[in-house]
Image (tube, rainbow, N blue to C red; front, side):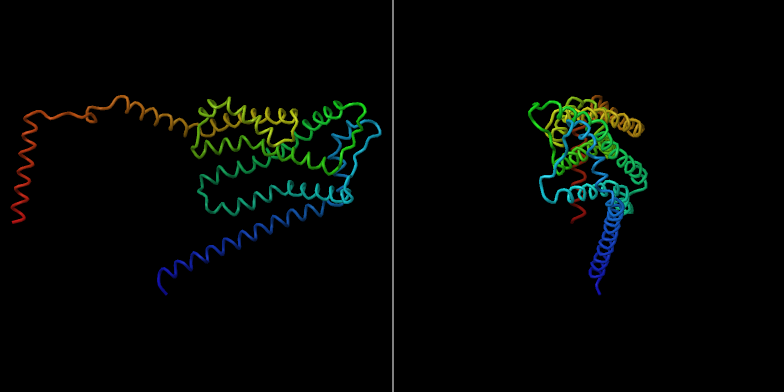
Length: 297
């Protein structure tokens, strides 16, 4: 067997081992979600009632939520418990992904990635809690009080679930802004100083992000944009503290390069030859040429 065949065989075996490991990791993720789902499904209706409290508290007296579709009373709590199982299993999911990619990382990358992984989970859950305990009461209180008196408010349980899941996902994702900021600084794509200079664009981008990730109402957009801005400032300050020495070294190098460009040394400048130096250089070239001719003959 040739060396190329052996190399191809080794690569094929390595690829298969990675695929087998990835399959095992995915199976563990699915099992974690399934176990949590089976534990929670018995209380699916109670969980939905708890989720709907921010709306039901603001409904007019005698008003209730409704189910438009025939299967909604079963499918909506089922969907809620399934999504809740995925959210609660997120630490396991992220750990399995981390365990899969960790062997290919350097030790310095591992030291940075582990705290970022834990922080991303905490921030995602914090975003969801902020949405439920702060945003939902304000949004639903405003919506239920602004309508005409002749309109009976009876929200469909399926549409309500879709609405709150969109808010949960939007706020959970938006609260990851500090992690994204730290990663960008860590890989050298930007610096805290440059991010600070881009602050006006970041604020506008936060409101655009709120418009994209939340349902089309001004309140939820503003309530998402303002925390994103605050979290961005926190990410800038944190990255400046974490990479203080690295950033200082980069600034020193950039300053040294700038000074070298502005004040070139005499050896770097072009100095024209005078007549005597030119004649000496021509004599040297002619002597080298004659030596080459003699060696050839």
